[in-house]
Length: 130
Image 1 (tube, helix red, strand yellow):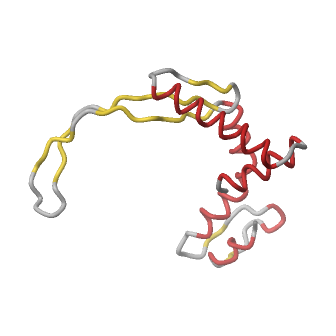
Image 2 (spheres, rainbow, N blue to C red):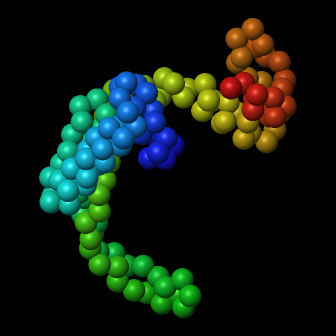
Image 3 (cartoon, rainbow, N blue to C red):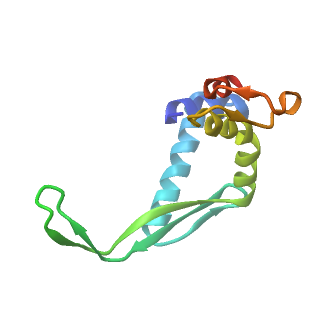
């Protein structure tokens, strides 16, 4: 989903025009970016937190020459999902994630599928469980 699609969704759910939804979303994003840039933590209860984090200086390698080089310390923006968001995501994606994991297995095997217990299925079968 890109910003335009998000604006459409917000406008639909909040029953406002797309122009109003775009203005509100842009203002919210700008406010979050400004606060994090100033070193503040922005917490949206249930959704998550945006905060600046410091990366330590570390040693890296030039991919072309293989020569060791020092990568300087820096500050980066970070997002941590809130408890409610994590729980919602896990609940809504449990079946999708299980079908993906099972579809990536390379051998035939026995899987617990409710009424289909103990039957052998090819890995491609699990791609269609969604």
